[in-house]
Length: 430
Image (cartoon, rainbow, N blue to C red):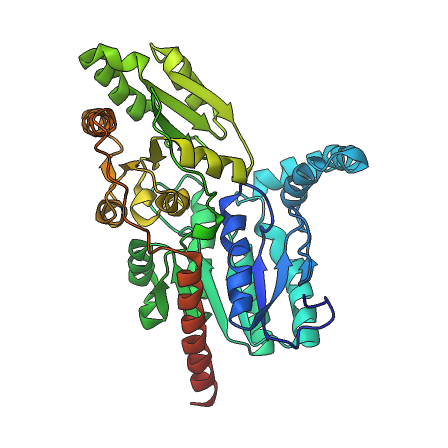
């Protein structure tokens, strides 16, 4: 592997992602899965991340702290999970910061990671001076990575690709009008200055284009998953029909509509209460737990809590039907849950509760899966009956192989980088 002092074996890219190497976190997993495919292209990643995850081995990896009390509290909570003395001093510092945190929240209504950019800029500029990257690539959940990348790219005159994992501006805005103005300004800045802007859903690209005039610099790349990461386990049909949901449940992404549909199924087909089982893997907010508790047949539901990623992949392979649930909010029309891509490579039928998202419906349907309206208990009931009947009759066909892979996404990313580099050179010399 390349040592932390030598990145001359490949084309260096400075990669800014606040989250990295955090088990079970989708926005960290997104960039983590891309590192080896990028290296296969001869690209040497120079990682600049927050401090919540562990360090990359064999890569240049710098980390930066947030500058605000809210950011520091967020990072200290992650550090506490490491146990030992780290847990002790992180807890003490958290208490000391609390008064400043409360003052910040009164004045600034932004995400906890908004203040990562100042120290990330300092670290990133130092990395540019030392390693001379050919490309800057900002990704991850928090928008502060893009702001840092904008400053670094401009000061060092380096081509820059920005990738939005979620739209910065969308309907159902829950924060203050001041926060909306900040994110709208940041979206315009990114879409104006970046040499290429990548979206994970085409509807998100179209909406951003309508707001900013992004034009030909906007691209859609479906992130995919790694089929090689799927455990080599054959599915065995048992006496029970298991429907399993993986990932967090919270807010409008909950089991209310699914369980109402399932309740109607049991009323219509009483025997199903002894056969159908709902397995839940992941975290649940209080609302989701209350919904589960209120279900009339509690013996049909098993809550396993959070498990490591590899164990979740094994459980996916063993289940009969994978349950995918979208938020019933406006922004669901321009997002595709990251869990979708893992599901598509597991080789099990998917029942997707989709909210106003024809793009996701087409993706599932084209590969032989089932999609139902996420806000319609009757549509969900019919979808459950269809899946249940196919299972009972042994007629469930293996879904088609998914074309959405990490390798395909990285191939697209490298092609976009080549176009961005040409655009940057043309803009500088033209």
